[in-house]
Length: 338
Image (cartoon, rainbow, N blue to C red):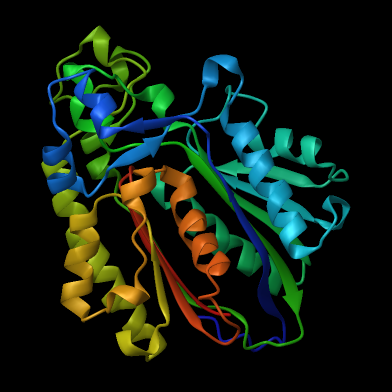
């Protein structure tokens, strides 16, 4: 889909924020929990530490999401009652129902607006922000709150049995406030959303025996824990990441040099490095923060974006390409003119 805003409605990102748990889990901490080493983890992933929510004491996904949204509203100088819709990208709801979106809407003080969760795993925020742009440009909504939040560590086995996933993931949340503008040059220029359910077997969280792929042997220790074929996911990510960048640039008629910031899902530093090398992207155009936070799933992209904003690196008129890949398998892009 390509959108050149012919209808006269543009979309601005008028506020952003992040919220992270205070608890930190370093590579040294993991050395005491399983057979691994700081050197090996850094070499394979680029990660030094990650945040871990204290879920037992109530630090849930909705709590992280609520704090991120409160901060984003303050950053935008917008009251919660001005929001027309609230969308949350998450795969770790506190419970099957109510949705995280409904809880956040209540906690921040929204009126009786629509609120819902969208689950596309690590691609969730990209899907969600693209949908929000389209909803605003349709004229249906004026101001939308968009959140990416996950407490994925609740689904991690911190033993040798779950080591492959344990070294990667962390908890966190980021949020944006989007608003309609008369400047139709602002907002999403182009986007791609892809999914291939044939790859679901490579990254999943089983809740019962029937959730296991035919190729996988049932093991009770795997229930409710992230199961990942690391090699298959890495190969998929490297390939699709580069493909979707090329696809998006071609459709928009732009080159990599025309993009001011590549705001990427932080899954593995080697995946990001491969894209930088393939397209000749200088390091200042592709922020890497995985060393501090690990893979925060839905929170990854908005956390990166807000760090760029906070450092004064994001300016009006710039072009930003959001990029993600995740379980499903899912992947995509969202190219914006700020």
